[in-house]
Length: 203
Image 1 (tube, one colour):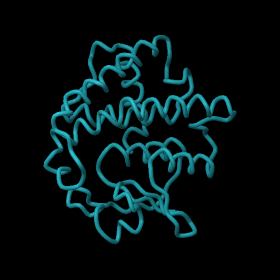
Image 2: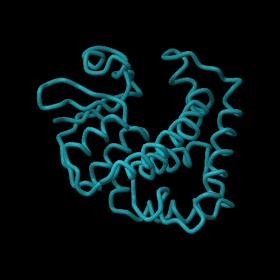
Image 3: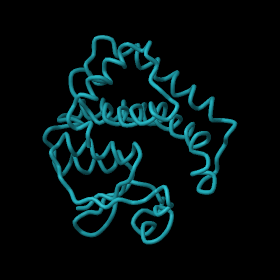
Image 4: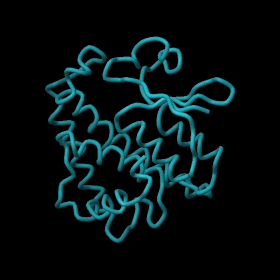
């Protein structure tokens, strides 16, 4: 297998997931700033033109961070970051989807439509007038999640999961790109500190 990766939160989520599992793979860096991901030969690897992508042993490719992590979990089930039981896996997938749709996606598009507009305006349909509202939507859901994190070590309780890694990758990245984590969200601030202290956060 080989991971095609780049700068940005998406590849970092996969790298951190791999680090937590002790998985080491060869990596090839794609220059997304120069638009290498939007042209051949990368488009033949991932037609969506996005990083990361995982080349499998048979030469085929899969993309999308949750899909890549699910695949790696099936190939390397220990330690479990999605779950050992149907109930644990369902809980992880529920939280991963909630975080992806309600926090990561509006956070990312809020960036693409504002600070990142010059990079993205010729690559996708951008809606600059929606940027502030999208960022606010992400913050609303972070406040909601903060209220649910009271007494928890991780999002699913005491077990670290893909949901934590996904949220951390995005919150940590966008904190440096005009979407900081509100310090009043004490539960999430403590969670962020625990995640930041993990060796995998350096991946």
